[in-house]
Length: 253
Image 1 (cartoon, rainbow, N blue to C red):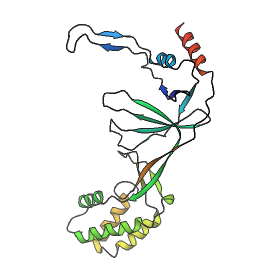
Image 2: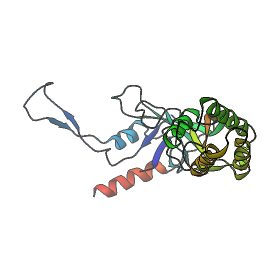
Image 3: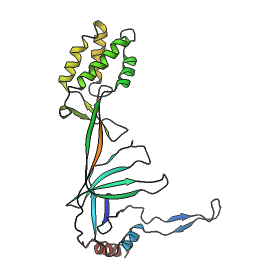
Image 4: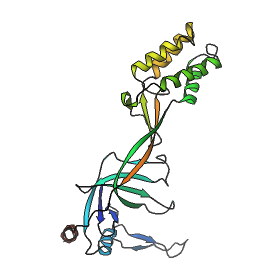
């Protein structure tokens, strides 16, 4: 179910789901052995009655447009995605005020974009991975710090437009991982010779090749959501409400 119904008069939206007609369960008392009381519901028809004689329209959700400022697992996160009526783009804001509240949807005429705030390396992850894979006797703390400084220097030379995005599983919608380009890898390896020698250099070289396409040597892009609201459009009456009611009547027959 990826279809919303929007009231042009109130700018309220309703998401049709298979659960619109599920009854509400009510118990006589908080703790009771008595059978629960089922209250019949039809949220969709309630929405139509509340917006009777208002112009309505369908909104189709644009795939892969979901974004949020909080991690995916956060139950109270505010999320955004895009939808269209075929002519305009809308931003749908999804949120809940309390953990046990149903989801609320707000329709914002306009669009959103993601602005890159910064690119980062993963210093803590690099240090831990070096410790796992390379014998501590080969690398001094001073050499590891010099390697991180070199990596930071390489970071300042990259152009994000030349980087390949990696489909890395990120716990946060606004964190995107990128693979270093070959020129940056070559620059990193060449300058590592000024930090490491002999077996230590060979171990670090293999480490870089192992992790250049996934893992700790990926660059992390941190993004910010920017919502661009559009001017309010003139309300145009659409025959959708009548069509919905007729379809509902036919389905019941």
